Length: 180
Image 1 (cartoon, helix red, strand yellow):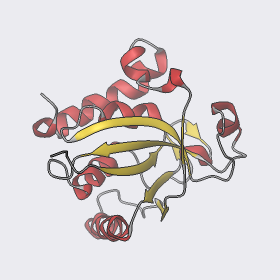
Image 2 (cartoon, one colour):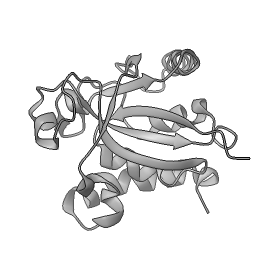
Image 3 (cartoon, one colour):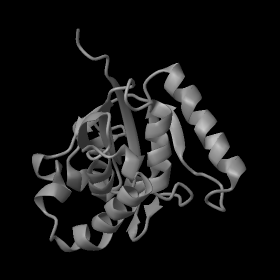
Image 4 (cartoon, helix red, strand yellow):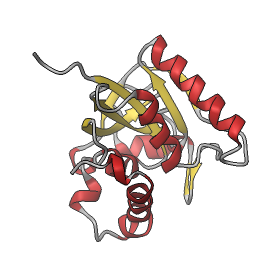
């Protein structure tokens, strides 16, 4: 009998960072970098960077809910990016770097709303969340060279300065949830 897998589509700044973290999370079967939330079919990276497609850099996370709940996946998501800065993560600025959850069904929407309310109530970020919550419409995989970018290019300057510290912070905060 096969596993019953679920899919989450999330945007939280640079997709290289999200992919690098979710790749290491126990219960995650696969992570693919791509584009979601816009109006242009099959956009290129350069089109998305121009900010005219409406797409965000996003990841499609396929996970086993028997090992990792959607709620726990969102908990990690809200820990590894700043959900309070509109259209920006660090020095990356533009609508393509927005914080967004593209829910695949009403249950994902309900859980996301619940998690966001809890984060707001706890005052964890000290500012209101600006994470966009909207129904999933489409996901367009990014070009091949973006897939597993951090794994393939750990010494690239952006990876060393931006991605590596996020991965290190994640590993420390979620050590018990890492793949062995």
